Image (cartoon, rainbow, N blue to C red):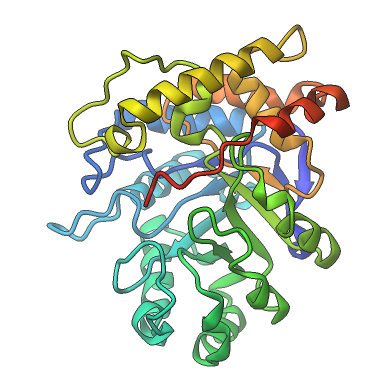
Length: 332
C-alpha cells in the first residue's frame, strides 16, 4: 500500500481507503450485509496497510431504534484491533432535513443548524468509541452557505475543543465545483466528490484548485455503483428495493454494457480488469489523496487494495480514457 498526503492536514492516508456505506447494511436502501464478513474486511484492510476509514452518521441509520450501525461496527472493530492511533477516521454530518442533495433555495439554518452539527459530532464520537474525529465532513453542500457565519464559528469551536481535527465537504452528486467558495474560507481541508472514468468533470476545475490550494481530495463512487466492475450485462437484475434498479434501468443497462465492452478492448496487458483499470485511472491523478470503494467482502479488499501496488497507467492509455466519459446524473 502506498500513501499520500491529505492536503493541508498533513495526514498520510492510504491510496485506497474503505467506504463503509453498505458495511453494516442500510434499512433505508434495503441493503443487507453479513456483519461478520464486514468485520473481517475491516481487519483485512488494515492488515494490508489500509488506514483511512470513511463513514457517516447516516450510514446504517435506523429510525426505529436510532442506531447508527456503520459507526457501531467500526467502533467494535476499533476496540478489537486496538489500532485507533494508527488509523484516520472520517465521518459526516447529515443534513438535518435529511434531503440529498442540498437545494439552492433552502437556507443553511434548515440543513446544518449549530446544535445539529454539535449533536452529530458527539453522536459519532460515542458510537465509534473515540475521543476525536480526524476528519468531519458536511454530507451535502451549497456554496451559498458561505454567507452565513454560524457553521464557521461552530466548527472552530469543535476544533478548539479537540473533538474534530479537520473539516471537509462531501459535495452534492455530480457537482464538483459547488464547494470552491467554501474552500476560499480556509476552514475546509478536504473535499469528497464523485470521480471515475465516466465522470471526469472534476479534472476541469476542482483538481487544479485543490493542487494550488493544498486541499485533500477523496474520490468516491470510483466504480460507478458497480457499473465499472464489468460484471453487469443486459440480463442483470437487481434485488427488490436496490436503488440500482432505477440507477441502471434496462435502457441505461444496455448503454452501460456498450461502454464497458469498449473499455475492455482498451485493457491489453496494462490492467488486470475493469476494476483495476478504474482504480488505477484515479490514482494517476496526483491531486487525488485517496479513493474509497465500498468493500464489504474480504475478496473485495484484496482486489481493490492491490491497485495501489501496481504500476501507474501509461500516458497513452490515460489519453484514450479521456474519450470514455459518460456525463449523466442517474441519482436524480
